[in-house]
Length: 391
Ligand code: FES
Ligand SMILES: [Fe+2]
Image (cartoon, rainbow, N blue to C red):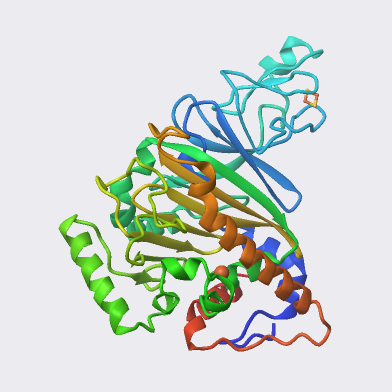
């Protein structure tokens, strides 16, 4: 395929969904965190092209993935994006039932007992989808994955994420939102990997963060603020040195100081939640940010964690999912207000969605040519190189 590093993706890769299907066929992608399904029996579903997968927090504590399709007549077992079941997962259609931990068939209305006790091939239980957890982050794979890929990724992020102990629970979902977007998911990811668009398109976000800092082109004032913050992080025993794709080509991790007077990722600078999380006993004007190939970015502040991930439905349509996690004891209306907690990413994501729709529309032109990336768009180059190397 005609691809030149330093330029955007070829038209075929963007417009022919077979390429995205190939990219994701045997690759781990981010699908949320343990915080999205904190209790046994909690369920969490998502679409990927024509598939629908549900994650279930088993009664043994492990999160597993299953195809969300009843063995009887293929009804969805989980109709909503999230849900919960007890010890039996019952199909809403004719009440066939399954063990939510193993996916095994337990009851089949109208069938002889032997159908369940001695099932024929293909009827023992729900089709499993590989799901693995690392540092509280959940990854799924539709094909035959290599778990060592995740071990290498975890080696990079664990020193940063461990103090938040997301893998040990202690969080609750304050808000989970999904939006179906008329945009190509790869363009959404490319948009996420640069901040050259930020000054003109994210006036609110630029009050919180110095956009030049995302690309290393820093001002003396920013350097001074960063040095201050690094001293705080050192004192708190927190890892803070950026690791940008070198030790693992699918992850970048960095800490950023926020503008003076900002206790969290809120436009007014006030804490997003009164309860702090992880290593923090006081609010800190900083974020720990993780960018994952192929499909996610996560921000850990001192009072909440915001996960963003994108999944393709088709070449020109994708779902953008965002979850805001807070301390499990935080009380809505007392410790946090949903609209205040969510405002920055709601506004910023909406601004980005507009740009991604626009780029998607433009890329459909038969005169489309991949455009060049500038120096401050180097993580876009990394992403496109990674995509092309893994198709
Ligand atoms: S489709 Fe599920 S029980 Fe019939
Ligand atoms: Fe943006």
